[in-house]
Length: 337
Image (tube, rainbow, N blue to C red):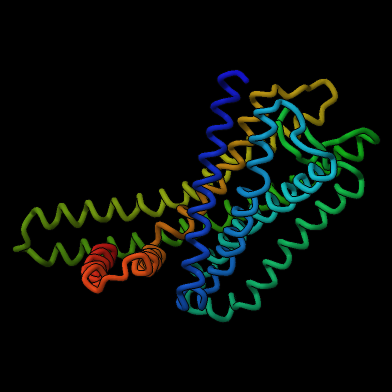
């Protein structure tokens, strides 16, 4: 095993550990917080976290074994199962990300009617569609025996093992159009609309702030400078968040999807190192999703601190430790809020 394979395997192990811990923490926050469970976006976050955990438990170890052994790491039946789950979970994760963007679009553009436009029933319908969409493509690939090991990607994935090349090419193109392209289009349309509304509100706030500062003749110049600086930070903050959501989706999924589409051409052979890199990028999305969509939010931070507090209490039965732990926890919660 050469150095690139060692680095790729080590990277996948690290990504799998981060993905398991971070997504498990998101699920713990969901289970321990009534407020999070009451909110509709929690349904999409939970579905996305479940997909990421399964990817970390099933697909990442299989790809790591394929990189190390440089061949199919186990039998055909188990490889077909892993391929089925890879196709199902990847499509489901993409559509879950798109569902989150739709939820945020409705919350920002229609804040007064959000509770009527996005209910638990509506979220359940969107999640069910995501599951049915992913399951249909995975089952179709299984029936046509298109779930195999690919040496170019060192993974058990959607792969033609013979038969009609045109039929497989059409299926692959439709699958990526219905999963990647549809999700990307949804992300761009919804988040750009969110950014437009956010900038409009920022502009209104800036006008009111500047009018107020103009009336306050005796205000200190440093206060005016801080207000102007805060206005700039507010604009950059909204743009940065939108860029992270769309940019992370593109960076993680676009190289792999484009490679799979180019691979359909009869004269193209995918380089093994590039195939492994593009596959590792798709796995890295499972580790970044918890931080992008939940764990960096104040609500999840507070719940996570409470969860850690309860776990530490069980390991420290002494009342003195518990009292000091409560004091430290309260201090941490104050700092977070």
